[in-house]
Figure 1 (cartoon, helix red, strand yellow):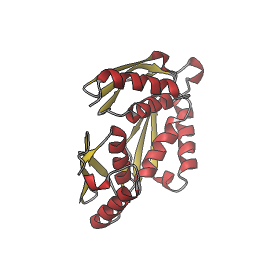
Figure 2 (cartoon, rainbow, N blue to C red):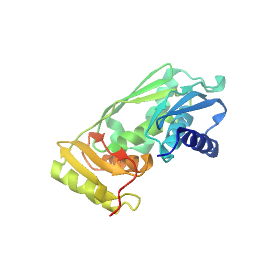
Figure 3 (cartoon, helix red, strand yellow):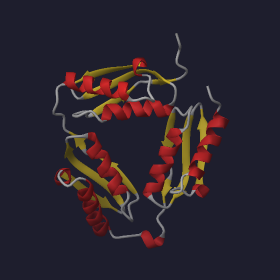
Figure 4 (tube, helix red, strand yellow):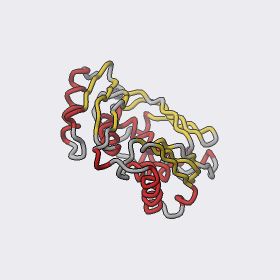
Length: 221
């Protein structure tokens, strides 16, 4: 079990290492393995990257991202312009699926609605929107529409876990109820826990992943 002091130091170092983040105004606090990020950044992309970097650190059990996006005056834009560019960005990433995605913008806060068939489409839409100049935050309310049997989903996820060299697949169990997946077991780090969840999300038709995987030292035989 790593100490909060060590985790805090490593998170701060990781933030400094990422060229897309200016860590000057970001505060890091850690309590019982849970990281809280505060302060402000100058783009939504920087906020996203800060959270991602914190999750990489061994011993991190959770991340509360309370960073505020404060846009430079040059990046302030009218909502109609932001909406237009978000629509174009999503269409560039997802030419077909973009037809089923609606974009709402209010004071730079973007909401995405609609339905897609794969979770990666939902994630790509959110990332595309977040890269648009003037965006302060993105609320991703896109729904994933299930279209495959539960047994097929379970099999595909288990196969994906076994293929991943970074995971001890035998320590993870997969339960599927309709389009909802529950993961249980234990892994060595938060990064491995997140990788297992990502593998589940990549299966076709998954609309929800309940990640109950614990982080700790794996027992060896």
